[in-house]
Length: 419
Length: 165
Image 1 (cartoon, rainbow over the protein chains, first blue to last red):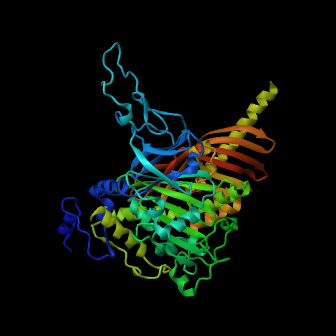
Image 2 (cartoon, rainbow over the protein chains, first blue to last red):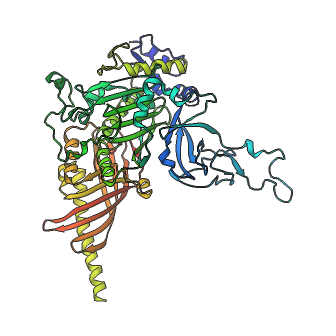
Image 3 (cartoon, one colour):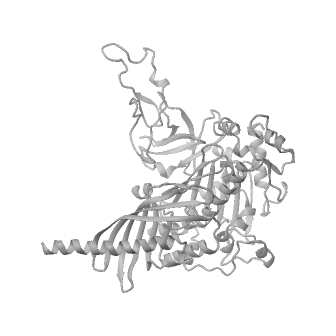
């Protein structure tokens, strides 16, 4: 192997060339700072809807919370007329990230440095010493408050999910999701009122795209996660479907749990290291399934490009926002919810079941750990291409031992990134 | 006056019992003995690890939420037999222990805790820092936890929390 030439091709000095073979994914998209910068321009500030949070996080007028559009800090507010707004968390004056609380309620935001004051729409409403002191100093005569507001994003909500975009002529959320994925999105976000149960946050030392890949990867789900296979949440014997939108950017892992324990063939069981036929729970309530959605799928994981994943698994409901923090790290914000009409027992059921997910969950630990290991491989070793070989691009969508959806995402990624 | 003295002495005695308990508890977890960890709780105990921002906003979501020992046993089994995670050393320190109130055989107590994790070829780092809000039951076999609420300040979790605190 010619070590020097492969080092050169990924060292940030020469142009990156994507390999011709569509089953190869080059390392440099996960580690290169120039690629990371280009993602901000082409993806997060491009023609995409960025998930920022849920309606139930700003249920009352005046409510706000910190969120992100790609890596950019934003504030999400509900104004006194009930409208949701998303604006940059960066003062228009010197650039202070002024909102420091996770969430709260306010009628205005005041930057602590020079007290520039903004309303819940992100408009500048007051600046101190505008006329200076004793006729000296102060703002220039042509200073126009209306032109000095915070950078605002366009906002749309669907089924209680809030999206933001910098694109001025963006299509509707429905069109953005497309006719294959939108019905699955609507099945989880069916318009019934949601109730916030809480938020998990973690730093994952890996590139943000690896998390989208992970949830487009049914192959690993049957191998890494004992809980999914052993208790039949996602297993080879389930009826399953892996749809993608026409561009390949959004996808779903849909699965229907059978009654009782999964009926896994001896051959499949021998292939699935994680499958533990004899494992029993001391407290099987954790897996109870209260039917509450009009969907044939008991498990639905949606990957909505660029940074949303939406989970409905049995009675666990969550969204995960991926916040890039440089090429080698991202933050995850897990927003866990139930429904406004849940009684006390249903809330407790959801809390018990949520032990499966989150950054201390039975699946969460394994995914977070393995993606850290993967980034270590990408960062530390000689550059090469990753493999996404399994399955066929034109296969029936109920094929589950496949990497078709990962290839689909990178077809779209190459196109939008012009790589 | 005598009653006040007695109450103070009783709380000091209770604090000593709780400290002894907590030192043994930390040692059990430092040795990854999660089966042994389960035995520090009563059958119907509540074990709740909750981020401080959730707790202070009245949001009930737990990072870990176990209603009863059976759920803790299931977590212990998973950690020892099925979960995939990187090898690590654990160092759990429990300090600033105080007994707040004694009600018949129950002791309400608080303590601060810090979990430092060390992974292969990585520097030691704080995985969790938080406060226990506990209810202990005095039993013939010594103290057992009826409730341990672990409210952690370290809201931004470094990758994942594998072992309980």
